Length: 406
Image (tube, rainbow, N blue to C red):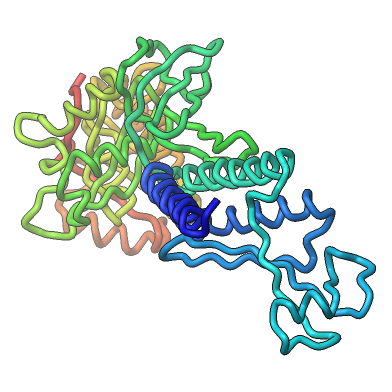
């Protein structure tokens, strides 16, 4: 083969390599530096397989042109004992007359000289590195989305678990993280909350949830501009997935109604979230620093007569009208249970009649002639600590938002 033709073939090989690296960089999102490192390692592996060792082998690659060269650094000796590491003085001076005994001569190794096994080994090294890097890229992408929501496509049921395709990787929705009664069909698009991303030898293992309270928070962030921009804050969430959620919100802008912003015009915003959660009811209440007011709001849609909250004991006594007792407690205690989780207080709810009978209820109209006498008596008795807070209101409080008022 003529020298010109040989150089042309080598140039074509370099161009093909550069094109292949560019395609891998774009399609797999793998950096060129990583790919060049894989090529370097593959050449070293090929040399080791071909010559038995590669201690004196070095590889140079131009990152711009992808032109690469592989050299064996051989020591000049009088008599060669190891042809892999050594070169005779006669042969060295044929390359360049300046070489003397003890000098190091770089001898270029052509990759086409490698045998079939060495070539296959080099190929395997490159493929293995690409697979590892591809798994790492996918892991990093979804690991950055941990504790966030993503949209996936239902693939199939694996026993009672569901496999969901997230685009570049599959996630697993286990039975414990599914909303009871929810059924999906293949190709159906759903939103899920990424619980955890684990790196494994077969790629990232992604666990997702439909029951986590943070799923509701992320849905409000995506649906409500004021929440996403930080104007309205979600201070707390308590949830019984598939049934009911209570969410406490607060506005950093006095001109923005936090409940109204979350509900939306004609309930458009909250209804979109309810639909995504399969009809799960959502109560939106105003958060307050005063525990008594917060507890009253949390018991919405029930009306409350009075609340006495002990901040030290994290306990509260609540009195409601007789006809509101069942609503305040809720079906199987759900309303009271969610309110307790939302506020962090143990809540004891009694009807007005029960409170009067147990002596826990003060009849403000009959026991005190006027408001001044009540407050004078309250201060003189000293029955309550500074941390105890009382809140009384004949209504249920303004600014309450509930998905249903039953």
